[in-house]
Image (cartoon, rainbow, N blue to C red; front, side, top):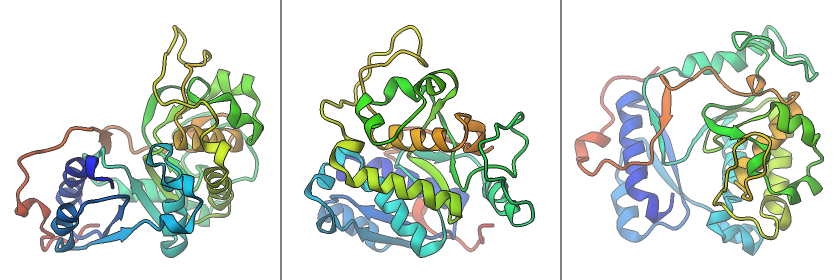
Length: 274
């Protein structure tokens, strides 16, 4: 969390407390000021961790290139075995954790096939990746991926244009499976390679044409572009393989901040979250 997204982050914390009162929250400090840190330090079931920028190349400190995101996911996955990563804009609507978890844990009894077979129906849930995205971005992967990335991640661009839908990278569930580790390895390596995640000339602002799937929008979504590209390549250019059934009734993206929060909104009550 950065200071310019602090109020947005507080809104997410309060939202989590409403839906999941006793779940532990880890907040990664990407540059919070002392007043913000003081506000967080006494919150129940919440731990603030300073992101170790000094452990990485200097360009990782460029917050707007989002290299820190896959590094946080990798660090926490190694520690916990499964993680929900959320940008400050995520807003939960209801508890559907068990439903999403079952789409990965069911592979204990019914292992996912090691091929790129496309799913014919989104209800075929037990073949999903251990790295799950949730929310569509409303355009394809190709329009928002800088061509320089293909130098590092070979891709069938025509298949990418034809089939791949882009999904938000700031809201993911990752379980430590053989497949997800492979995906995350290349995600991290791209983040650490200066010109992979942020090719020269990359910019965030897009200029979409009439076709939001096949026309390059002269922009780049950094971590989002890379993880969508890796997942598309790994799973036959079909998002059903790596998008959960959470849906908008489970959670949405909302960048507004609630300015009327009180201390009561951050309490962990006696109800145990499932």
